[in-house]
Image (cartoon, rainbow, N blue to C red; front, side, top):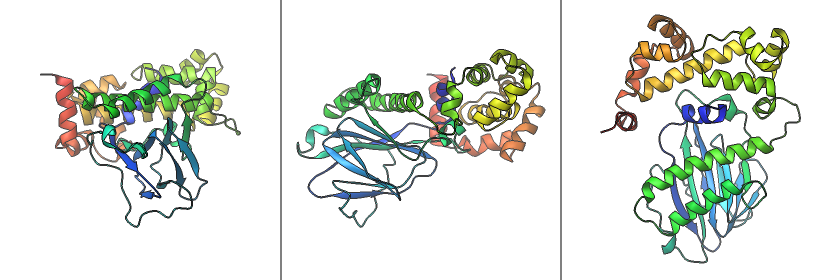
Length: 319
């Protein structure tokens, strides 16, 4: 898998939560911070202003997409001058029926929600993102994102058979296309960070290799050869852009992948060890405990009773 696809498959947890919300007249609604989640706002109809805590207002119109990669608290309002409602409104905790057709034509309508992240924390690729990502889907080069927004609007306007399955799938695509658009367009003044790392041919080649074959016995020398650099310059460039030396990143990613397999599958520990490049259960357990401060078996048991975990495992096993 490529880096972005792989990161999203591992750091996400469960289905995205969403709800269609409408406002009329003079209004302002406060949304509390949601640690461990990526929030999103899609303006389906009308326009509004997003006011992040301690930052400049962002004016939004129909078709705009906003990602809040760090679950930052914010206010949505008709105007920056409108005070928020006294009672804060948290993002929805479960999917709710969408009924755009039942909402007044004059109303501002937004699709609000969040993508939950894995409990051990997000990938540095996500941590490197700004507090607010605002994307105008009418801009050139964002036709795929615009298509997803239009399809979400169509499902909201006319719920029918399959809508409950279509909305989460489209929201997954929304996250992917929005992040792809940001990384394609990102410019970092310091020349460091994941946006730069993924544009750097040498570092990107090494990252893609690690993500495609995490169980491979990679060394700094073999990754450097793949990147077309000698060992020392490669290690220096990788560390500067990624934020970790190559072998530390490899170990961290292997453990992150192992944690997902422990949470979401019934695979034996030996099979998981093979999948992430360890020759024995014991070797995996030592490395896992070093990163997560708990043995793999205890980590797995802590998620065993979760309804969402049981649901994901049932889907993977099939009927």
